[in-house]
Length: 146
Image (cartoon, rainbow, N blue to C red; front, side, top):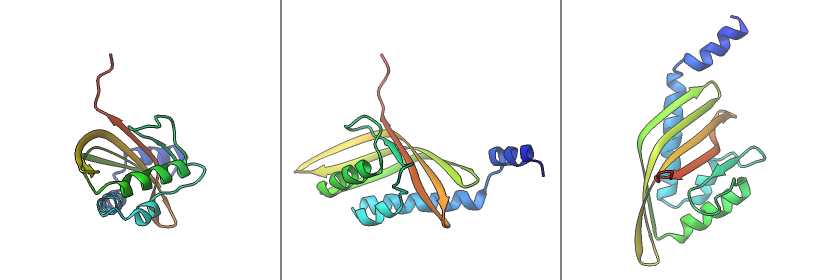
């Protein structure tokens, strides 16, 4: 197989078994978030020099792994209840990298108040050591550009 043919396969092959692995990992991520199991949730991330996140809450700049770890831990443990639900999930696998896109609808209860949020989400996973780990997150709220 030529290099060009291998590259074309990365863009066209379905990678069905890997797609199912990524979907299961995403279910693990959501389950850990619902249970507020932050140590487990963190284990699904590849926090390191290549990790990045754009969030729909402040700070609205690119976050590194340590900032993401701290802010997610504070947010999840600060809530009395966190119920994320994914809609319209799409998983595309490109060899050892997968891109997931979805709408995340969340219900949060904290300090006696309930809030509901919807955001477009993207999680990018990379397969390392036989595990799919999150290497990038991006969330953006539903607002129109003026």
